[in-house]
Image 1 (cartoon, rainbow, N blue to C red):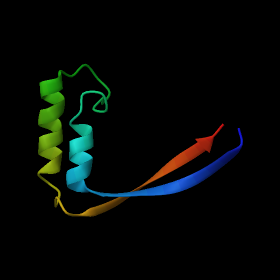
Image 2: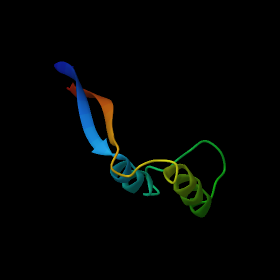
Image 3: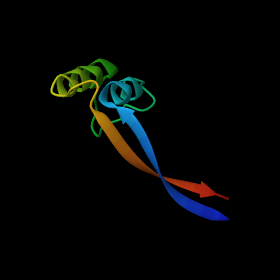
Length: 63
């Protein structure tokens, strides 16, 4: 490993919903169908404000 860095990824709730709508990234624990996952996401998203800014920390590793 050559280097690591914590980077901040800025987005909105709408962008996070789009990301989590993909079957590749929507993998909550349990035996859920894709339709059930999308329903859960829609219910949770309805409690948010789409333009709300969010920040996620990512560990970037250079090997």
